[in-house]
Image (cartoon, one colour):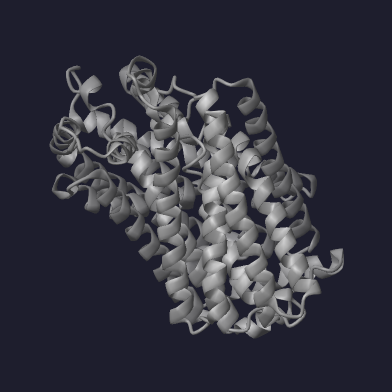
Length: 529
């Protein structure tokens, strides 16, 4: 039993390692505290509405969403990853014991986090002496969250049985993300089919101009969702039994039913994972031993670009960041254009002005290209290979600008796809070409500046590739290097649109400014290197 606890502890501790940099530790503490305060404020706001069923429903909903998001992350990065295979297989441990520890740890961490979020709720309920509601919260929410987590793991474990058939990790990760998005989309479509409130009615009820209006808006949203869930056959029984006091017998029955279903799903997931563990682990190790395909050419640029691609391909996490960088802007473009086409935005929004639509779309795409900052930590990504830059006679300019070129190519592909979507939606016009060239020049300017700090202070001592990007303070600092110049140029563009009658002229002036900045930056950075 002690061995099982130690194994579970091993996987739990591997979920997240505390950042080594004091600055990042402080930022993390502030972020966690801010999130906790935000949730507490919303909890108090919902509690002040005086509707106990809505208050209970809100907490059930928020904890379920949180658990689903955490299990999505942990399942892909931990449960169905095999980083520990070489370490644990030689030990006297069966595949079932290892997979059991992985699954339990992936359930335990999200459930604990979701219950920590419920602390303000419990305090509010106990102040009002609502003991039964507090008891329901402590018993029912963890069990429902376990069911949600196991349902997700069940679908992903089926995909995992085909792990060794995927040519590379990126294809496997994309398939997992596609399954998750398919499940989310299916739930949203089913939810939409059951709701009786139209989008126009929903938007007309939103009022954030005052505290009273905000509370009324929150109550309307929760009430709409509550009524919609009550229109779903099985889910309505779960929601009703949890949020009301009249049907305690139904609550006990539903609690027992969910527990039994969870136990059954747990054993099914364990069986599927344990059967494929050794096969997938061996496949993982054999894939990692495949030699890199490098072709030495007479072109220095081609050789340096191949080296940068080799670094990116060294870890699946790096390739996944590239994939996200390619997908995020087009997805954001589709969402924005659908909302515009459906007239979701009120007429007093600046977005409703056609003169501003193209610019808002362009800068949204630019922002989404920059938010997944693949250009901010290119030197840190090298990790143990960084010593080659010191020991081999590499040209600093070629190394630096090869990193800029790779990140810029990824951004430009995302921009082109986003503008293709714009054309398919029928919003393409002559000014769109100028805006496309403008944000292309700006994203290159951004990518030229962001690696500067990471070049001088790379974070190389990482055990997990996520630490090179996600837990790296250089990401935040690189934003300070790259964003100010973008913000300044964007401010100039909108000022010109405001004061000049022709928005096309304003865009051309901004394009010239962007290209000029691009040429100046290349010259200055070359000198600095």
